[in-house]
Image 1: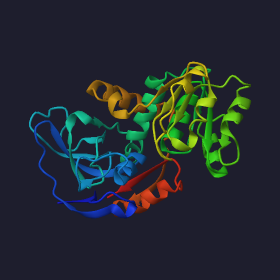
Image 2: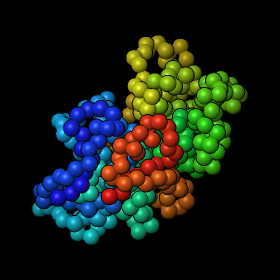
Image 3: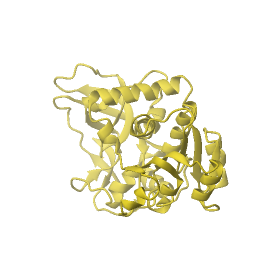
Image 4: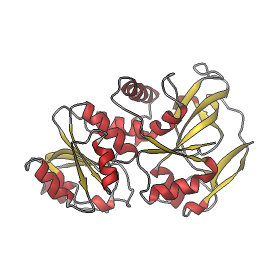
Length: 324
């Protein structure tokens, strides 16, 4: 028997129920993990409130976690009981024990703690595909990262700065601005006090940005498009303020033949080899000092509802995790 956070009815944070669940033995190609830390992410909110549809209710919420393997199923040869591991695979992560396909699991280097891994898996793998694959950031690029003091934002700002990019971030408070500056931003815009598109134009002397990374959504659209130079790319990867509304493709044309994409992590790590390469690159960036893990706060698993309230109210910075 394990403890888990389950959703029986779609709704607000109050829909998160702490209860006992049965954990099966691992089947063919699966491993059973005793979890030490779990990530808290906006995608969990989207499944809880129904923006993203779960297969059925009730379901265990959550997408990434870290722990130790306690059992392996038939056919599993790369993992053994006692291995320290982490994964992104969900929903189902807000639990003390879980069965996961072995192909979705990566081994943790000794220098990565369980807490760091839980803070890194979804957010760090997201930053990896955004900066290295969706749009390949290069030295000298001007890039705009919305919610620069958030979980993905702090990782992306650090990583992009280490690659030689000129990083502009948007935040909501002066405290978050200080955090963004200390994590790689050259310029930080307080979107509650300034027109961020006008400020970007000023910062870049009218050249605008090569790419905009937007995990906020509705509140920052279409202003994000106004920050892009001709042939620039608008990367919408989240919906913290609600989804980007439908828009006419001519909006891209009249701003200079812009590109727009809505990527998701699952597509970038669908193949086992892509997952391993991304995780290895992420862990190496931590080892060489390019990334400091932005782990800010740990909540008890039973307090997942408070973690969701704080996340949605923009009271958190960096990454939050749950502990059993």
